[in-house]
Length: 138
Picture 1 (spheres, rainbow, N blue to C red):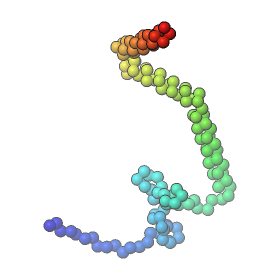
Picture 2 (picture 1 turned 30 degrees about the vertical axis):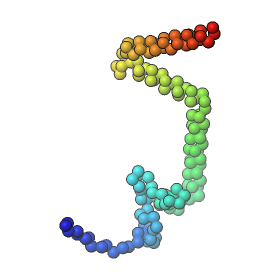
Picture 3 (picture 1 turned 90 degrees about the vertical axis):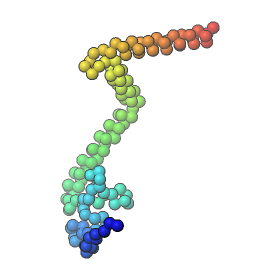
Picture 4 (picture 1 turned 135 degrees about the vertical axis):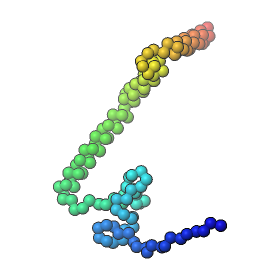
């Protein structure tokens, strides 16, 4: 049986908030989680990062104005991205890029065998459509 060694117990002291010396319920100020983001207190998504110390009203107003401008530009960007014309443009770009990737080597040379295969597949689809169209009409 393996022997277990026990560590001497450390006296338990409440963690201080770092400012007033009072015990803190959230641990050390500015604690971060595994992702490097401040830990959430689990209530309303607020973090346990320390609050800013005594800013002047002018500084607070300037920060609010800067945040408001940033949010406005973000909303404008999202509005542009959500427009159907913009979505179609992005999809067209994506299809073109995939076609170029499929028909060209990394050096930029044309892959003749792939171009031939694509042309043959397109011709087969056209023949099938023509046959179906004639059967439907006649």
